[in-house]
Image 1: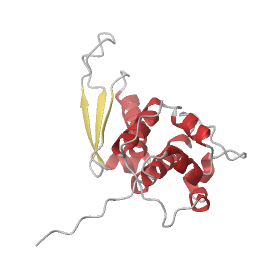
Image 2: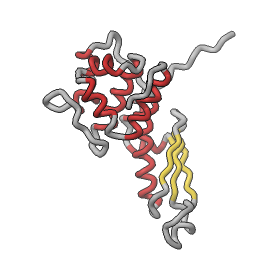
Image 3: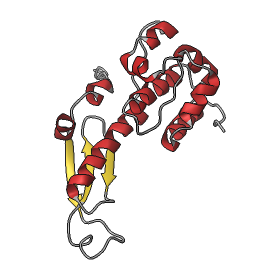
Length: 183
């Protein structure tokens, strides 16, 4: 007898959690980081590795000599990884109006309807999640994704270029669907 497929949880299941709630879902490993940093660096276990059990994502932070700072940085990287790697399905019968109504997308767009966000803006990563979800839904066709998002193709490409990891994620989606990488 075949087992029924277990439905994959939505990214929003985790992305809306507080840091404490998200950290509770992780296995936390601390270890001694190698490399430069003075005498203290190799004597304390300040590097942090988070393994998010439900999604399988693993992130590390080891640049600070403070375990507390590295844990905060690792949590930030985990949130980014969730938006980069975990796709949510679009609402049924996705239209530009339905996409515009998504809270993460509505909050990200400027008054002129365009995206002008940078990676340090707290609205940036949720917007990345929506953009990559739309790209995945339209088999990575940029013009079609821009139309659904209600922005120009140029604005979409400019947004994707804002962060190297976002650009790489978009090109991975394109490769999965047999398209040439964006340049």
